[in-house]
Image 1 (cartoon, one colour):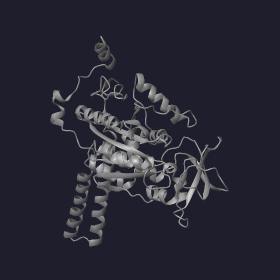
Image 2 (cartoon, rainbow, N blue to C red; image 1 turned 135 degrees about the vertical axis):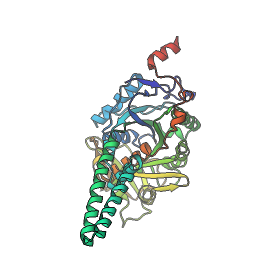
Image 3 (tube, one colour; image 1 turned 180 degrees about the horizontal axis):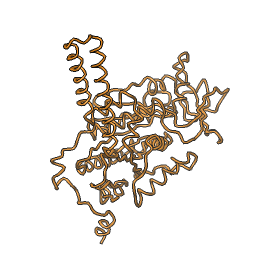
Image 4 (cartoon, rainbow, N blue to C red; image 1 turned 45 degrees about the vertical axis):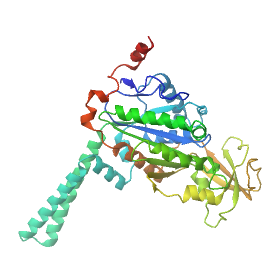
Length: 421
């Protein structure tokens, strides 16, 4: 499987990551490419989100080389062994990426019935064939009634023909969808604490260059870009505004607008804790100190203080839907397993807390090889399916024009050696 370099050099001074990016060659059976920028501050759970996504998708890596292969190995250690050491924190000026492939039948199998039917209708001829089956049933029933058959018998016969035809059309659509080609997903690990720093414009230019070049080189493949914003309830603080999450929430729509239609997924990753803090009879204005502990390890050195109402506003009450011109989708899940929240008698509050807590809880969890399940699984796969299969179809006529192809298919390493010489 040959791969092509997307960029022969870094495009934004001071930020590395684009120069090592490759893409599948044009003769590979890949139906589309997705770039997913996972944005969150240090400790918010970006790596956990990525490994949950890989497990959920049953994703696998294509033949990679150099830095891409090393990044793939680093994240696969965590995918296969949840207790393996996490990759080092992303340093300033570096945006690592992880390349994976997903099989369309895995994506389709994880969707709910309505989402599955909608995706098949949008990507295959299911709607036309099902309509033809319905028309045939109506015609048969009407003809039987006109020839003197009992109305009930004619209706049952027509309904049976329509249902049988629709079932055959659905099976054919599933087979056609499964053979449509795999999707390549590239997860970009974007350190949020750098995004809202003085280099924020550089990170925007980095992703802008990525999206522009991907679209220019897409050929007959579909392409889409979207950011995922991590929402860690432990970092929300005691005020609705001013937290790291709030600052990133204000900025992320600018990144989403790099592609159209603009979409953002907000991933709330400690749902058991949110559930406990948002109890119906609890004082919403109460400030709670949270001691986080992974089973088998010592508790965290400090206990962040959060206000119940702030957690409720950003995590529980936030709804899916348009926010101006950006479509927001929420994913609520637990990054750990066997999550438990219990009350504590007392705890040492975070020294940086401006409002002293009046209550304390311990949030305990296991680091096991989990994946998105239930509603979270359906939400994630549905969102990814929208990106992959409802992206604007490429202009086949312009894609066939040689000028739209940045470079002819060639071996990436021989091309780079020629450049160096």
